[in-house]
Length: 162
Image (cartoon, rainbow, N blue to C red; front, side, top):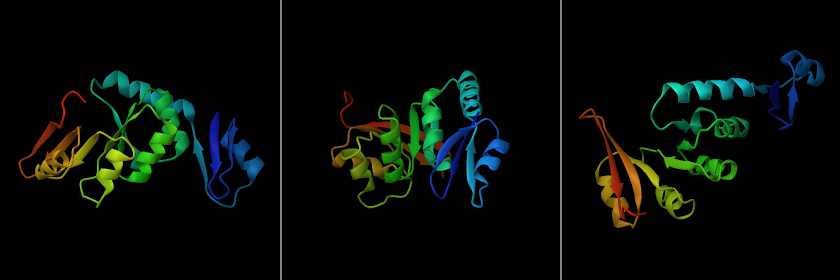
């Protein structure tokens, strides 16, 4: 069963086939169709083949139905590149772990993510970003990608008990 959304009027309805949707709606504007079983099966296959922590990059597809399906399939960690993405995941999946994975500092965004949204996982573009985070009282984990050195570093910041 497909779930289709008419993008302009935000109507959502389940159809058995795309043909059924076309006959019913006769759309003149784009329609977004989701195959829930494909998301569920693909996610299960990925989990079975990957032993690590799985993060879904919300920027890849921020359609709420997709995020809900992935959460239903077991995805509990979401890579968010903006405050609106953090807010979207928070609204749809309150128990999910959000990672603020924006390598470019946007003034005030990390503080808002930490204090207003409860985000505790951040990416910094340079290890000096860790100093700024801990100086502001953050208790979180941070990932630093050191491209020049070709290494990746994970650090725990602040109170390790938090």
